[in-house]
Image (tube, rainbow, N blue to C red):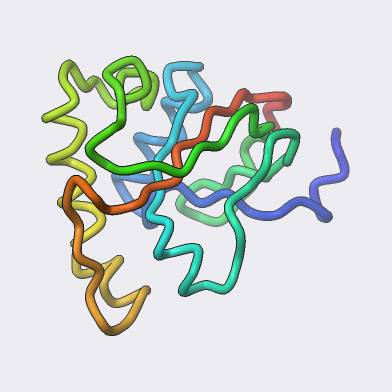
Length: 140
């Protein structure tokens, strides 16, 4: 087993049904991309991951279930995300519009708004997002 104690934590969504679905998609190999708000990184005082970074994926109970390696990271406009990237999120998206609607709902959810604090993040096609590709390197 990899030394997981020195890895940063990769949390997908918030604990509960969404995280459970996302973690299952990661473990099955369906989910190989993810999208986050650049503003979330800024407010948390951290930089987006870089290629080669390894992270510990945790489940809803906070248990490590896999180690992923970041393959590629791009910061861009939400309106510029391509269909292939959206499909690789492993959530069954069949169009960029569907991907966008689900992400806008998450990025403006009460949970994320509470986590990020004031002022609320405006989410539209010009919102900068961090688009990452990754692969599972170890299941725990």
